[in-house]
Image 1: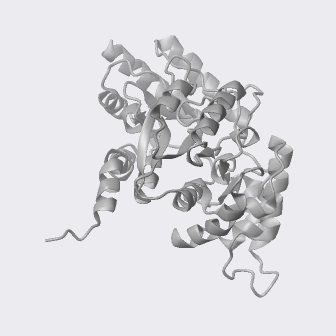
Image 2 (image 1 turned 60 degrees about the vertical axis):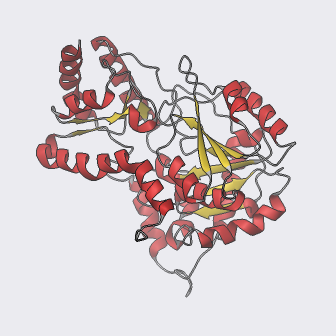
Length: 392
């Protein structure tokens, strides 16, 4: 008898299995066991309350100003203009408001973009370690994910390996810069090399770049950021406000077509259709109304950098090894034993939640979020010390 669940969703379910169990079973049980004593480094969640200006903006814009204030919305023109102006100022790329499609955050923007450009059987290259949902999003449109490893000596893109992975079925490459989980900002020279490879591939068929830039404003040590949209014309810039505002549950983001994309007129017409077909993947009315006030706001990046520095100093002193992240929310230390899941289990015994690297296609590492509070960091340090001592 035919199963009740589609084969496509069962494949996605299998793909997400370890991560789903981690968030759905492991973390709730640890929180129940340790209560307020838990040290939660699992994800980039707010742990100290919302930004006051963020809450003020929502209060200011929740009061209806027109009869249709909360009517159905697509990508509203005032919000599009805010985003285009912000991108021009920050990236010096002349985005057109008409090329901006406002979604319920970056995951929806990726889903909409893949639905727009991919046919069943297409291949989409993802950079490993990837965001854990990339594979699921690709599979859900009938395409196939193809993982290409970063250069582990530098955490930079391995452009020759990307070139070698391109086939006649390659439709797109997803690049996440700054990179979750390593915190690497891919340098302009690397992006130029990648653009040359994709330009060559596009001589056979249009080959797109999805540039997931959810962390492009969370940069440490006064570093600069270059968007692939400034270099490669067939780029979709993908963004979520949930990171810079540290409000991932209030979901607003967008997909923006690079201004010199050759197929932009054809794609413009298809993106709204894809938003509808992806379950009306449009940001809600309130967040769009409030966007002019929300766009300039940011979590305290210096505070996050200070937490990075505290963890780096303390963990290195204990003997942990890792690349120092240049941006984003995460540290990716090496596990002192090969079995990173078992090592994270040993941390959990002391009330510290860390994500095994094997969940992110990077076995032998573990991930820590610097959105954990200062108190959590200090309480966790003896646990990290005991764990590495036992491992040695």
